[in-house]
Length: 194
Image 1 (cartoon, rainbow, N blue to C red):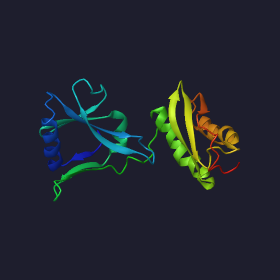
Image 2: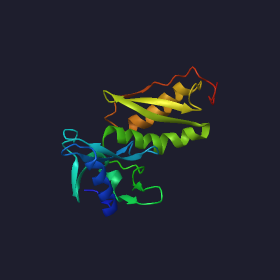
Image 3: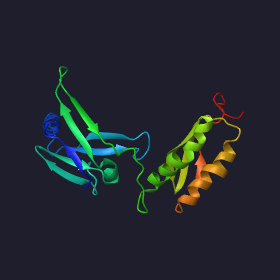
Image 4: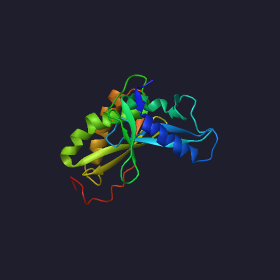
């Protein structure tokens, strides 16, 4: 399992929160939303009985159980959850230095592979025009993309999609069946080419 540290003070604090829930068997769940992307966010949520996932990794701690989402494990490597008391009561902090690091391999989920190519190969080129593209969904192995910034409403977006983004994604990710744009291009206020 990934090296995740939940300090003794954080364990006491989290166990106290769980005790206030009046729910037998409640635990916490650690995961990273949008892992491997610049918008990655490390989260702790309640995990009521029945909400756990079969492939969760379990951490038995002092006074509580933590479920760690399997998909998030590589992004939680070297993560630290801490609680520090202060004049305002206290603050729970989560430091996950690898949450935004793109980590992909042959067995990585399709979403991670697409985000890796978008954020490391496609978006740096689009940034020169003030644009960017993000993954909105995957439907039947087709990447559904949203363009923003200088790409939204741009007169060259079809060329960018077909000759740039789609070629980059399809050449790097063989299991991808296609690419679709769901951006509303009627707003041309920030378009690079009109």
